[in-house]
Image (cartoon, rainbow, N blue to C red; front, side, top):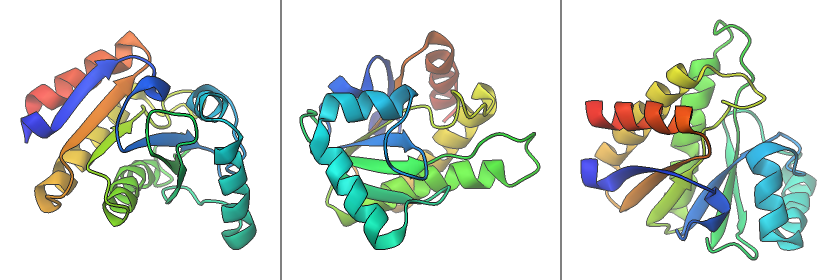
Length: 174
């Protein structure tokens, strides 16, 4: 399993994989943080497909995932998932965050993606504690990879040193 999961520090918009995951908001219209960076780097095609998804289903709920083109990104696809806003941990935040990873991986499998890169979902402005998020992220991905053999590689792409170290520690535990 260890050879299927890795962590790097860098910019997710520059990673060459089948799909990168976007920590989106429920409107799918872009925003700040990784969401804004992906929309800027990927170009207008991503937003156009997001608008079609919104017209069809009214956005994306917390914990769910949808897929669009990667536009001008090195990745073929962007899988948009909406992470939970942290409200103290008693409102199902952990389960919702785990669902982000599960559902993004499920969408990846449905679209024949062999390689996928995740950002640190919900650890920015959504306020999810980084240490708890790292445990949930690595545990959930490890669990899914134990059942789903079609995915060859999952890369956690951390923008900051703290998330990088926390994910690295969790990978070492597995």
